[in-house]
Length: 377
Ligand code: NAD
Image (cartoon, rainbow, N blue to C red; front, side, top):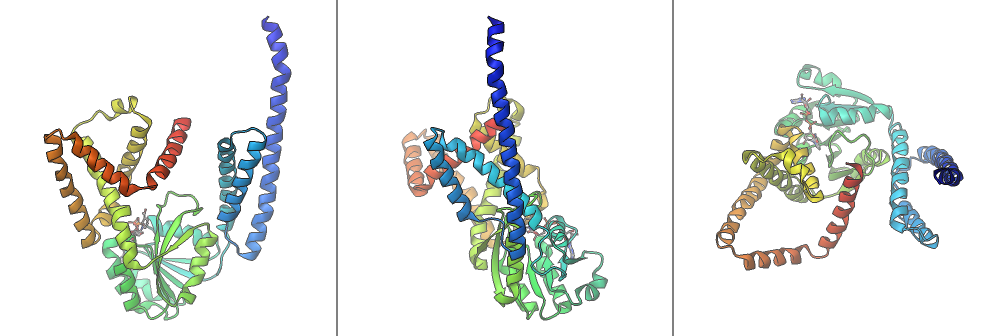
């Protein structure tokens, strides 16, 4: 009986092995073709990410899958992985591509996390990178001579004074830009100290990302857009997605996206720790959503506290909204004391109405992430 089974399954397994070998050959062939696309994009200085082309391809593969009776979500998953992998290949190659190779870039704070991150990109694209740190300001004049770009990447609390200090050394035609997580005050200071092109940048990611593939960089234009365009083109070529905004609008949005988000996470994490919750034990019992939430909370405490304190305490408007958030928690006290379930349901419905159609999207996206988490851990 057992022998019969072995005899029958052997050719089936061999067939599957053959198909797997074919899949590998096809993936390898596809990568070869991708290399040709990269070479062409490099010749024409075209960006890596082509959203319309990717979405067309996914739609086509989804409908093809249906004609084969295969679950379209399954095929989409496979293609998203293939496309991401091919973008990463392209991004690594494009990292070497310079819009203005040979130009001189001075990074102020260039040994710090973000400064050294961008220094690596500029160097691999053939730029001459110079670093101004805390201890070589006596060389500032020399380091600034004939530079094409000065990029400020120092901690938020010393950004304004650093901009004021570097201003007098800059060649008038050099582009002055910064990476600060807040934009209005640094942009105004840059405009005040420098007569040439000025551009504010805020990378919405940290230095742990290996490529700029699909990473968002907010830009806040300052002066002479034509003199700033090459830097934007360079970021796009490295794979970044650029979101343009006014500096004040940027800061207001970051009050929510960064300050409120991180502060609420900080409060939650601190509450757990002060209550001496047995984290490990709760994780053993965790629902996927708790695991995901803990991933987000734990992540904050794995990072640099001073970066977050700078973000949270950056502006008076930020402190105001965080205060309002803390006070708003008191509103819930009466509801709890009175065991007022109706009030809870009323507040829940009111908030759900405010979220509107985004709730559906949020459910879809978080389900996707949860499934990925379960697949991996
Ligand atoms: P960091 O502390 O790692 O680096 C700052 C560097 O500036 C350090 O090397 C420090 O020695 C140097 N420095 C301090 N004072 C200086 C001075 N007067 N002159 C010259 N150099 C000086 O900080 P970071 O995380 O790289 O942040 C730099 C900027 O990037 C900040 O404005 C921050 O808001 C922004 N940013 C950071 C992140 C992130 O995830 N780290 C993300 C987006 C934006």
